[in-house]
Image 1 (spheres, rainbow, N blue to C red):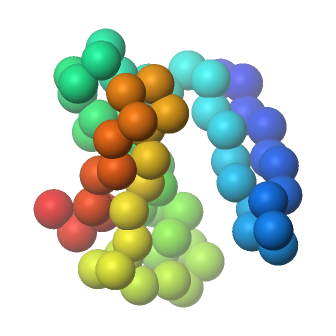
Image 2: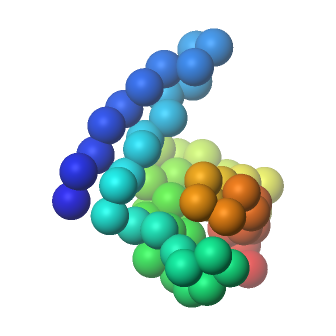
Length: 63
């Protein structure tokens, strides 16, 4: 898996090339990875979302 980290206005953004959907398809892998990262960093997953950059859809992590 190809992972790159960029910083945007003080926030680190992880760009993962191999985890994507098929235009509105399954986002479970993306959500699971984001949820795991937020928990590891001690952040509240109940108020977090992840953005699929392929279909431009924000998915809540608490769903």
